[in-house]
Amino acid sequence: MQQVTDWLESRSRLAPEKVALVEVSTGIRLTYQQFHKRVSRLAGYLQRSGLGKGDRIALLAPNSISYMDLLFAAGRIGAVFVPLNYRFAISELAYVLADCTPKVLVYNESYSRSVEELNEQAQIPLVISETAYRSAISESEELTAAAKVDLEDPWAIIYTGGTTGHPKGVVLSHRAIVWNAINTVVSWGITANDITPVYLPMFHTGGLNALATPVLYAGGTVVIGKDFEPSSIVEILQRENCTIALFVPTMYHMLIQTPEFAKTSFSAMHTFLSGGAPCPYTIYETMWAKGLNFKEGYGMTEAGPNNFYIHPQDARRKIGSVGVPMFHNTIRIVDDNGCDVKPGEVGEIWISGPHLFSEYWNKPEATAEAFEDGWLRTGDLGRRDEEGYHYIAGRKKDMIITGGENVYPLEVEHVLEAHPNITEVAVVGLPDPKWGEAVTAVVVPTADRNLTEEELKSFCSGKIAGYKIPKKFVFVEELPKTSVGKIDKKRISDNLVQIRKTNAGA
Image (cartoon, rainbow, N blue to C red; front, side, top):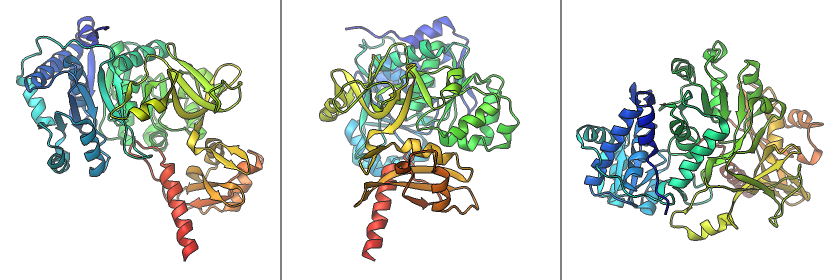
């Protein structure tokens, strides 16, 4: 058994006065020494409250320092941190609590009513508000002896969005979280000089692990924000001298439309990253027009989440590429038989490395289905070019087969996103008696614009093959999103099928 090194303690010795965390909503700033002592007091409080190795600690709160407090305190006593998706419905949260059976639930006071209702069902031994726990740790004694924790022991359980059924709890061991941090620091060149804002929800791997834990591992600073307000974000990035930022495409779309973005140079920022969903090329072009380094990444809760690296200059010559595999992981692109495909061919992305998750909590069958001879089967499609650079083609389940031809929705979406009067678009396949599936585009036009099917079909003509051009266009005011801000294609498809059935029966 390989014991875990307390790397927060190590960092507090190496750079005690360096600022580790900033909480935008309260103005709290913690040095590594202060953060370490705070975590040690919280760990002591939790241990004296009866928590120990393997016990789950749940948190229901908007982004705050509490996420880092509880993650690292859980690690000190061998407990398991479970951040709850505050966008879940009560029924979904009830399912998660019944599944992970936490021994303690920490909650933000804004969720008091929900917690009261949930606890009637879950009967959690210790329920405490954020305010109360912060007060308690200020008076608590530090942990005297940390638990003996093995690298394979679980450190966090992150629940997925549940678009295909109940949410699944992705178990991340100490090994997975530490190796994601190491891999990201080494491959991306993260240093103690880096300062990153976190506005992605921290109940999600993008907010918790994409940049926050790697930057802390390197000795940098994490600026935690609660609400993404595009106009104020610019001021925060400037004030805190942020150097590397990760947002999802929806956030970038809002950001680039603000007057503040247009008049700001972002002199400290060396990299803007997009992740969580495919990024429209129009966003790339807007960022590059300002002379900003902008690139796209690929990740998933079960794998890190970080898996690729691309240099900003390579991102310009290979638009849309997520780059090459990071230092300590391996990528394969395979066909349906598990055989590697040739460069340029599309196949499923398989990943191996020390950053992979351990299991789906209480779901051994789903865990077994996710792996093939030690390789994680991602369910995502991609291709590799002759230089070894990778491109994401979309979810395997989203691929459309029309008239015997494969159509990858992302390719069609990128074409339509270039139309000046389209704000958002999602391409799905609908059952069709002639074609098997009909390529269908659901479009959000820009304000006060009336688009027609004929106009958009003409726009696509010559840019993609005829069979890829949508046979039907549906115009809507907005696209449904999942709890982590991704376009919810399952809901879109289900809604369109239901509308078709209703119309047929009318």
